[in-house]
Amino acid sequence: MSAQTWKNREPFTWNSEWNQIHSEREEVCEELVRSSVADTSSGNLRVENRSLSRYLEARLRLLDDAMDRLIAGSYGHCESCGHPLDDARLQVDPAIAKCDACENAAYH
Image (cartoon, rainbow, N blue to C red):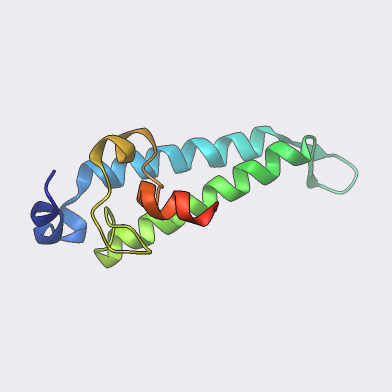
């Protein structure tokens, strides 16, 4: 999809992107619940696998951020430089927020 097409799209007409992000968000929430067990003595959930729980919580934040960008109309653009993100990368990970160049620059 061209940069011009991304710019002309309204946030709530992006049904496909919204559904993809929302679907993964639901899966992450379900996995968070499965990774916890009920503590029958207190009625609270207890986390069995802390590293999995931390990963899922971080992924949930990334997905929530992607949904916020979708609503704001900035989804599909690098949050650092503003260039359009590659469609293929968005298909693989709809929560990406930076282009390859900015992502690589952050690690060097």
